[in-house]
Amino acid sequence: KNKPVEKNKVSSKNNQPVVSNKSVNKENEEQEKLEKEKLVKEKQEKEEQEKLAKEQERQEKEEQERLAKEKEEQDRLAKEKQEKEEQEKLAKEQERQEKEEQERLAKEKEEQDRLAKEKQEKE
Image (cartoon, rainbow, N blue to C red; front, side, top):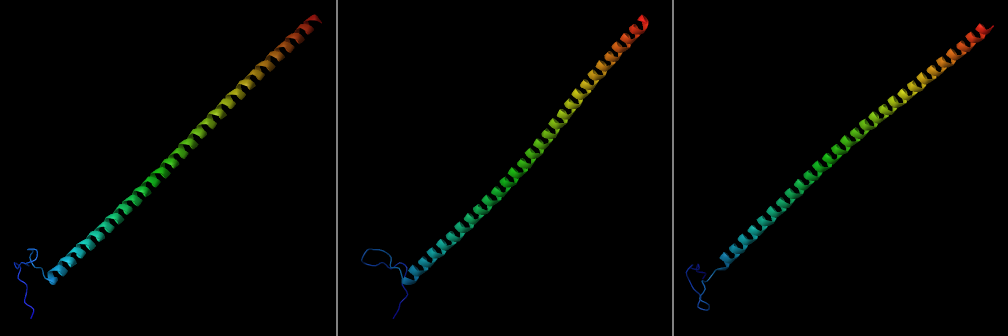
């Protein structure tokens, strides 16, 4: 009943080799298998890309946080330095004023002593 189809048999209609249903099915299966493999591969590549992107994003975020902390620390140190300089400036100014006051008081006493001496000498 069913004779196996010979490969070189040619149909008379369009001069094309006669292809059995089995080999057509097999070709279709191969094609589907290749397409499935392609889809799986594309999916894996997409997942890998997303993974890499997430990792890069995480690293960038870490770097931003590190830089922010560094800047915060630098700002803090600069502020401390400025406050220390202000304190020193105030201390120097206070010292200068105290010295001036001491000199003024010493001159005043000197003047009073001189006047008292003159008064004593007159008497």
